[in-house]
Image (cartoon, rainbow, N blue to C red; front, side, top):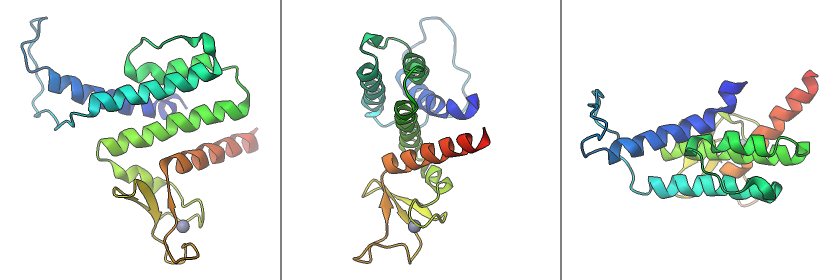
Length: 179
Ligand SMILES: [Zn+2]
């Protein structure tokens, strides 16, 4: 599903658009006037650093697999397409690792934009129930199920990395079953 696959790129594009909008306070050199009616979304000044770090991580991951990949010079939101192209010949396991990274960044981008509801569509990897909620202070998703606790009675909680890994693994298990 290309639509689904490009979710991470689309989210990064939204972040980039917010950032660009914020930067465009000075008159546009092309002479065009902005027709945007809505005020620009408030932007965290760390957004540019955040986007750079996201791209750098994908770049490093890709170059580790394909040293000939070289530096990435395209637009930020296309970095995922580039990574997939450069690593399309890798074995299944490494392609899954790449997809888990891309998916995890997609969750991060959504949360960076304040959309923590993306967590809710994931079942808890421990009890399988849909009751995860995002906790900013820990940077993890916690399970709401009172019975889903560790030996100390603390709710099971999951990093985005863990959720992405489970999501990609379950998706791949489905596609194996379908063939
Ligand atoms: Zn649970």
